[in-house]
Image (cartoon, rainbow, N blue to C red; front, side, top):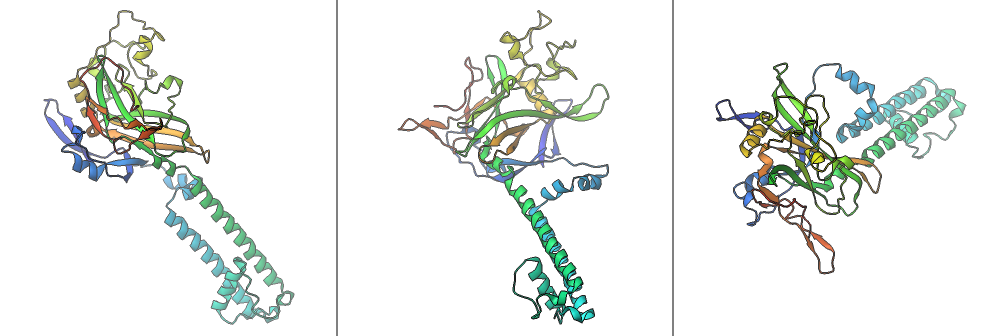
Length: 408
């Protein structure tokens, strides 16, 4: 839980406790540096709460026949349950099968002496059942290893042998699927603890940095961003929680937003009129799909018009650049949380992995840039210092050059 800082209608700040949309797991201790003025005064918070990786979405689902949903796909229900429950279930299944056949062997030993079973107690029957299902091979309880050709013993031994094979197959398959999953592969992907908003050539940009810590790189790595916001709908006058896609300029999502993860990469989203971070009061009152975002219209990018890839229908249209105060107010009031999803294939197992991270309003820094964490070694190679990966430094309020990632 965290406090969301909101502004009421009179402009005064209010506080509301809200839950993070994405539950986080895996903590780390960032390195404090005097070169990072952004960290001064907030280092204690970073030590206690800084998280690297994302586990699950913090979404509660109610209503409907949820038990039927789990039983309709029982395999994935079992695969995705906790390991301790799987181990307990496997032990219980084996114990029940062994105990059931132990009772059957004991019953035959008492009721049919012609079978020459030679089991004088239930404990002996249980031990014999364990030897049978596990094919241990300690030997028969009596010298008659064929049990006098008894039909009931032949049936029981056959059934228990096949039961053991069936349970072994389930266990091997279940643990293979769990260990072969690429979910833990996401632990090697790191995101900067803070995102930044800075102004470049008169426009505002939302940025964060990510990198791969392993030398075995992801194949076809690509990134997506979604803005989760709370607000009221003008049409139905109800509170809504909406998720909107954020178009990316770097890497260009027109060509798949692919990343080369060998070096830290800066992901850049421009806050234009199609951006979920764009204040509603800055949008024109008259809707035009070629120049402004609207419900059911696909999100566009202003950069496509500026590069000559797309034209506006209204040739006289001029984009209104929001002020910093308008941006801050909109981000705070909408309780913005940016969810980042990185997908790729592990080069070793070819399994698809997904790493998730999120940034709330308190983790967005203004007019900052990322500290350079990549330098050149004496032999000409690159050296990545992950202790500097999360550090920020002040950036100019406006700049005439394009922001670049942390390169040498």
